Length: 369
Image 1 (tube, rainbow, N blue to C red):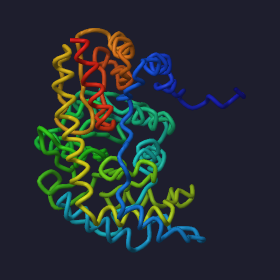
Image 2 (image 1 turned 120 degrees about the vertical axis):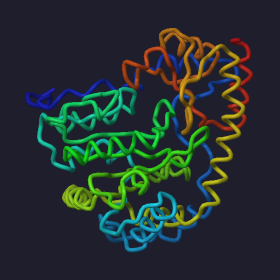
Image 3 (image 1 turned 30 degrees about the horizontal axis):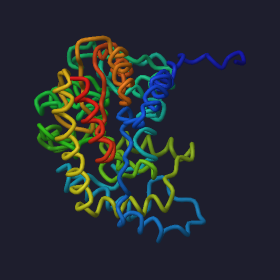
């Protein structure tokens, strides 16, 4: 590495590389691997979306960073219908998936090096990475509102949670929003799994019952990857505080972060069609109904897992021991340690496999009981 390349805060090793030996072991199973480690969709992209993408395939010019007018109108409409929030087109911006914003938000906002970025102790690793990329200080916390606000520039919340599937109660969301506003700290809510509630109904941080009649000091991030099987399209958006959105747009213009025009058309189609969302949720519900009792019967305790695409499971041992035992049965899962030290005895088990593979997992789990 050349001198100066490591001047910013060092990034952690990419966690999934550590899973490679267990993946190889699982693939060696006579029946093949059942990969429940990563939440990548396996079902077809809805026809209504594919058709919209194809119709917009002739796109020789550069798309607008702020999104074409149809996109902005669709976002405003969807936020009103689904999140119950009233926003203007100045408060929305389409993004290249949601991970772009998770990883770059501290940088896009221009947070000064050394600024603290708070996020849950059990969390998607990219909150930490995004802080480090900006030269900020990543701080995992249990309770945002119990923190000293000095030096804090951004708070991340994630409900439903990845990896645990926990849903923050409305009272807690209100406390966090109030704390952020009191101390002038932006609250960014990662809501990528909002439409996949099972034992609890998630509510957006933008809902008037949470943030009142103003979205000041609050941002929400959404992705179409899970709800619409669009992970390969990289379609998402950010919505909320008008000043924050304006700063994000300006920075993205300079960087050249543009959602491709065909993807923008697909995004409009996906947001305008609720039927495919309901159908996909029903598929995941059926898979969850088969997999959850099988995991429990195999001696696991499932914690949280009220929503989203994962079961947060433990059998009271180091997570890598669990990963190894399941890999020997041809089942690959995510070690909880990837999401923070508090995950050392849990594994994350994804629902994102075909019906056939879920059934195969159920059978193999029965052999572990």
